[in-house]
Length: 93
Image (cartoon, rainbow, N blue to C red):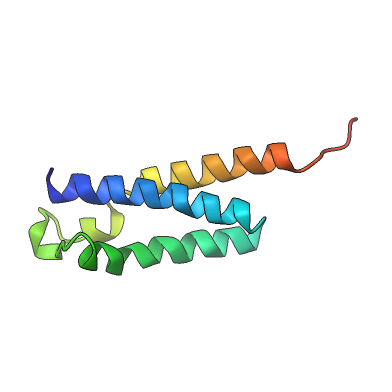
């Protein structure tokens, strides 16, 4: 598995972890968005230390920062929003 695929998969799984934290802490609104942004930023040093990937290992060094953004956002937001929707009781019209 090449470095780009590792980053893509790592960030996708981290998106699910972030959604689980948001759900567990019952976060909503800005608090959840701040946590999600902080967790994404935290993936940068984790990728360097845990996966041992350096920018020089990639075809384009900026991929360390942007690769895997789509799966992270999709898995985090879709999971968090879906579970939150079913947890919060909504009044009947």
